[in-house]
Length: 371
Ligand code: SF4
Image (cartoon, rainbow, N blue to C red; front, top):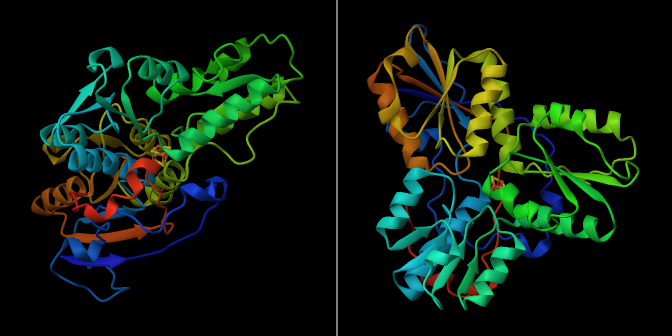
């Protein structure tokens, strides 16, 4: 199999908005993300082009785990290491079936609500964050809380609190019933209105249209959000938005990679679970470009119809999908005649978040887990 690494292009991101105490270069318990040339034994000199006739895989980069997901899974692993099983986790720690199953096997107990956690037990809040009501319930039940909320979600929560205190009505752009949106709505429920599309914006009736702001879920489609914000600006010219977009760097980068590669492929396979918002957006972005795309939990879900007539298949993974699932998919494709692999990197990604302060001092004890 031949392996080629190709172009990289920088894009804007909002990393400068991450509080300094969340930036960390010191810790990562996961194995480093493999590059294309570590996935296969066969090496090809950089720049080598594919030979004609070979079916090709375009492997997108960045893909897979983001810093918030790495941190959240680390938190569960560390807690299990330090305190032993069982450790309770409210909601799926990240939206990926394989990750949840692996952690469940290691002793984590996933619950939907805190009422299922025994009084005084240790519980972890997921990467998607919780509302203040959940925090209050944890205090009332004397639970020992470890908070794995992604710092970029926390940033949106803090913005909501600040805007509400300043008397703004907050228009929250997001998907109803998503764990992150439920948490953010809970920060200022009296001041916040949820919209999910342009039609929702058209229906808005605000008491004071001159004192209105908007925030967004972190894992939305860049294009759809742009359309919604454009309509908000048309209806409420004085609306105030975040200094930098709330859609996170990982969501943005993975979507930009799909956009860049869509014109070069016949189909896209996205590794990720159905309840992963950022993974679903990758499928939508590709379909919007006129290229079929499929969301797969793993290579066992590849169907013959997905590859019928396909010469070039692009592969990526949502921010909560482990890299070993990508490797297995690549191997599956290789066995099905896609013998040429080309990695397409559109942006270098090197983001790490510090652990919650109560766990940080224990990191040297950790062993790597599967990434
Ligand atoms: Fe944080 Fe973005 Fe990852 Fe969600 S997708 S955990 S917001 S970095």
